[in-house]
Length: 195
Ligand SMILES: Cc1cc2nc3c(=O)[nH]c(=O)nc-3n(C[C@H](O)[C@H](O)[C@H](O)COP(=O)(O)OP(=O)(O)OC[C@H]3O[C@@H](n4cnc5c(N)ncnc54)[C@H](O)[C@@H]3O)c2cc1C
Image 1 (cartoon, rainbow, N blue to C red):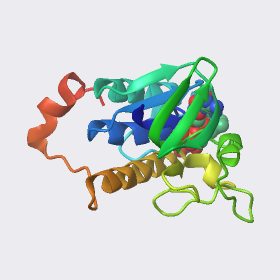
Image 2: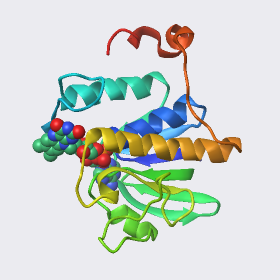
Image 3: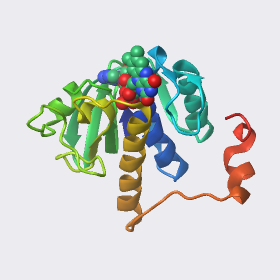
Image 4: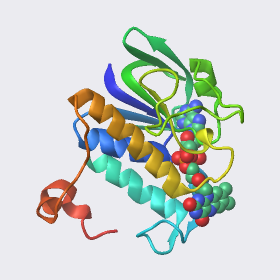
């Protein structure tokens, strides 16, 4: 049993995992490495300048790893279902339990539909501004909640919004993840000058 399971390791999923694990929730990411970022070159991700999409993902993976996210690279999730107070997440290899699930599988909506998440009239997963779906404690992020207008920074923002909502529920009050320069060395360690 873990706190949060994230399905998908693109910008949306890794952003969600970064925020939840950094703020004390045990988080596991399952990813099959089909992220569109491997096809992209970023000129429009604020603060990044010009960067190859795969290089961006490499840095993001190192970033989540540095906070202790359990990243199950290459393990496909085949089903997500409600189970007790949380969710059971089935992979090719095992079954896992979590209190919260963040779906971040890009444009693929199969797991969300299997879980029973409502769709909009446009056929995308219906999520509110916190990215929570019609199934409580299940979140949908990135391309699956939009017919088009797909951008990496939007997916990353969705993941962060989902994570902050989970953290707010857990902590019982509105939560934000603010750091100040004095936190840099202790929090980000050796990666501080890499970006
Ligand atoms: C050619 C091209 C160029 C692009 N250029 C830009 C650009 O310049 N700027 C920009 O902002 N955006 C660009 N994009 C769009 C950008 O890549 C996407 O918006 C972004 O990657 C979406 O992020 P995501 O996290 O929602 O989904 P994805 O990046 O698609 O990540 C989803 C991840 O989930 C995994 N997954 C799916 N199903 C499962 C499962 N069942 N179990 C486990 N893992 C699973 C996939 O393997 C994948 O790794 C481009 C896209 C393409 C195709």
